Image (cartoon, rainbow, N blue to C red; front, side, top):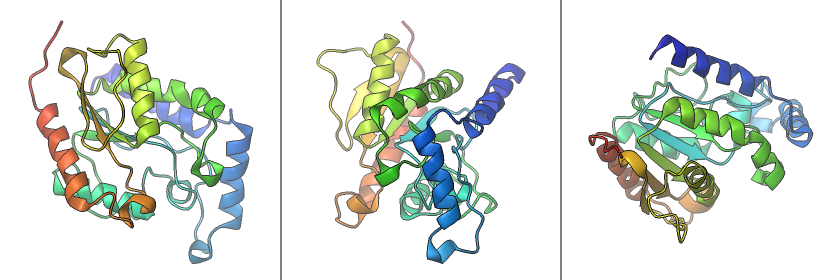
Length: 236
């Protein structure tokens, strides 16, 4: 990674962690960090915005927001909860992570060829950020894209999908902008310069416990992501 790109990535990390723009979200993160869940009462919660995980890479994995007792506790995207268990197991199965477990920031997890991010960097009440809060956080999401210049986006859920589509439309990167592509698991959308957007059901308990999302389903998405990321890029 170039010195300029590395500096931009480090500055983005600092800007995210120090952000206090959304009063409701900051208050909620701090409140959860004080009250804690009984199982984690002896742990120090992160309790603030959560930065990207990984270094600029060809695959950008986009979720919604940190979990109250997952990333808001551990300080790392999709870490310390069941959603993360599913995500990192799938990444490990496809050679994108060195291990299948995601417990805390010191567990040795390393990503290869991918970055994990969220469209909202703070844990929201009821896991539902407002439209205004997502808009306030959007510059961090856009800076992540601009620094990474990913070949493949993987949208974990419909809100992440729509955020990526919006970015692609605004930057003239959607080959067929009308009608706008709808989210679906396994859905593929061709972007300009040989890039792709893939849809994947979010690995939330609501989806994994009900069987809406299975391990073969999520594995298939990341297998496709790797294959597409390895293709030569086309240019206009």
